[in-house]
Amino acid sequence: NDEFSKSKAPRYYVMGNHDVTEIGRAEFKRKVGIDYDWTSVNIGFLHIIFLDGTWGESHAHIPREELEWLEQDLGDIPKTQPIIVFCHYPIRFYEHFGISGGLDNEDELMSVFDGYNLIATFGGHYPYYGGYAEVNGVYHIALCKMRASYAKITVTSTKLEVDEGDAGIYYHFNLNTKLFVI
Image 1 (tube, helix red, strand yellow):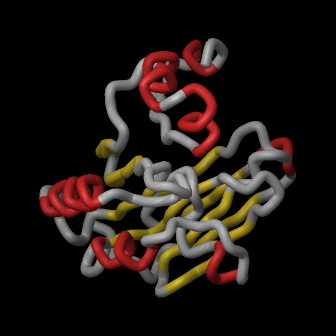
Image 2 (cartoon, rainbow, N blue to C red; image 1 turned 60 degrees about the vertical axis):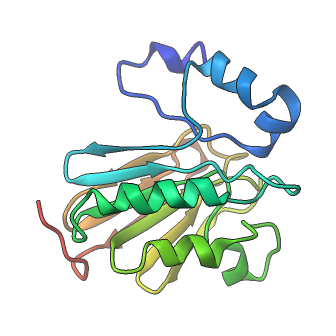
């Protein structure tokens, strides 16, 4: 966090299972200087949501309280506003590739986005799996955290680009099929 905190750009965090099991939720939040478990922001035309999926026995669950917050949060934005989501666990990625280990209530989570303009979700968790799955018009991207020290994500009204820099991974998605109100 010392190096990251030197950035002049806004910083947002999502907790991972190791953060919760090794130093604890409260200590992680104290160290990085946040007061939330989950939150959202509007940046330009995007609504960006940061979820905490590290609850439950498996530390891979979105609790009812968070889902209710999400429903309220989405109710405060136009249904056409483009949305991206960050969560430690990739969403819809593992089931698409037949890998176990995703959120245990993914279906319930994704149903909250029905009728909204969700364009992409981002996660990490597994160190060696990177890639993406397009499911029902939404790009679900797993960042390859063991090979990439950062990812640069660019979203415009026509494209979504993910550049994982030193890992040499680059994705470009055409968003012309999505409805944008800018």
